[in-house]
Amino acid sequence: MTYLSHFAILDVVNPESVRTSIDLPRDLHRRLHEVAAQKGCSARQLILRSIEQTVNEATPKRPRRRLNLDKPIVPSTGKPFDLTNEQIYDLIDFP
Image (cartoon, rainbow, N blue to C red; front, side, top):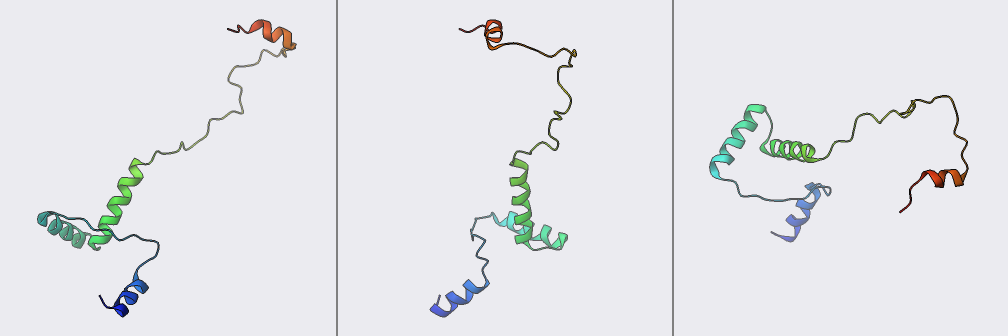
């Protein structure tokens, strides 16, 4: 690669991406290009979509809704607790 061609390639490459290479069996490579042609996309696009889908499936999903804490878990009897610290300590069994 010449000095000038090296800089020409750097202008085209996305700085947010990483170039990698893999060895594919010939049959898989052929089938990859066939499927990409059927789907009307490039083999690169098909590979990127497949990798992204696999990574997204492996990422733990966050729950869609948070637990609703507006309602009390234990219904109130209407009588407030009026305990001193001493009374609370008496109710708790300490080791």
